[in-house]
Length: 153
Image (tube, rainbow, N blue to C red; front, top):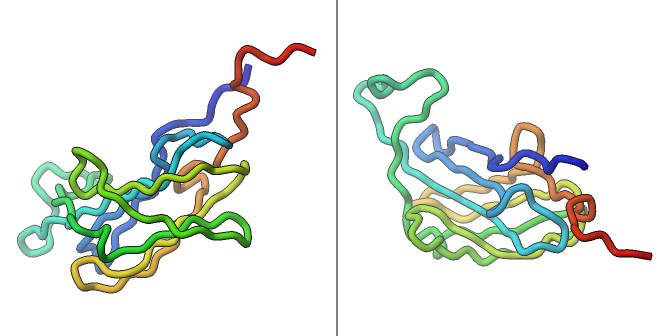
């Protein structure tokens, strides 16, 4: 039997000269065709360290501790893109997760999706597109190989 693709993948990007760290991907990964899923967006304000030095104990691959950015459901817009089709995604704050926003949809085709995020973060304009890729978040997978029991003929 096939193994489901890896889970928990998301793309991380610093915006506005490193002032904000954005994590984006699907709410549930792996994402399967026909299953409820959606956009996962997390935005944190990166703590400025004294004289631009990293936090004590932070390694090269570690990020500085951030503060969640609230209220972005009123200042940011999002859309999902598949091929030549796009659909607006209304952002909603995720319950119990400050700085995290969700927008639910049902991916209906396997393959690569992109999320376009635009508007402003705390008064600073942004316009970013994130595409599923090996370096980013996972593509949508067909669910048939993982369905059980199989239909009988």
